[in-house]
Image (tube, rainbow, N blue to C red; front, side):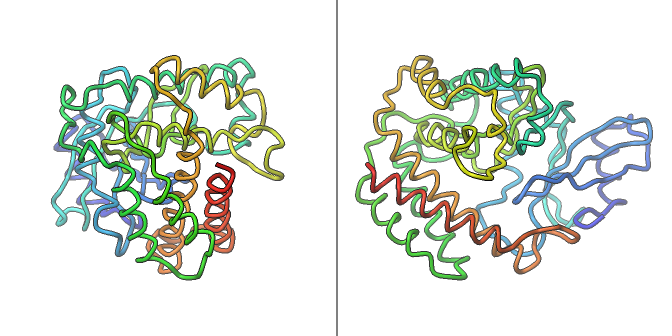
Length: 336
């Protein structure tokens, strides 16, 4: 299996979980565009999940397995549902890169409209409010109390994010996107004052949840998590919450219909947290801008073959997505 040294990883795993029945079967899970995720199954049917960085060269700060493991471990058993962690391997002699293993949580991950079309209407309508409740619970945690006070600087979140993703854009730029240049300028000029600091997930959307019966069973993909402005998570979630017919041909998970309105998500979050969402359009613009920078990094990694073999990837679609997000960011900023 590409990205996995079957023998060495199996030997490491048997030390963590002695009851495992060898041999182990490793299967790359579709859906992720950054850190690679594998399902691990032993001969008795026990299942686990393994996460490792992308293959090949990656930006230094973007794929820290120890950080992701620390976050998930700290949140285990609390108000924010996560998969239980089992072990972290930092010895690159085992698998050429650090990795960690966590429990398998049953349930679907709703990446697109095809997946959500299988859900009952009652489950669809319940998911939005439950996701907001989980997000509000995350943002109301005291980072110091759960052992994550050193996850990052608590202030100047937007400034730090602008610096980080501008650097990624510059490091992975392959073509000119004028809307990206202009939105970068306007975001810096119009940056609002930060009020408070929370644990920010960084990629909080339906496609990063395992769900069952209209509720979130586990929040996944914590690689972008840090401390900072919680409204960045809200703006990102609102952007991902595509309404039916809003974007022609859009296959977003919520575009199938039956989910609550975007405005209701914002109202519920404000009611749960007491936060003022009067400048939420800035955060929606920032979210699109950041996705353009992230998407450009993914596009570049696919170009150089760092995301694994045998992937049916439409590179033109990835490139167009980068431009689309940059233009959406600019549109929010121009509209105010």
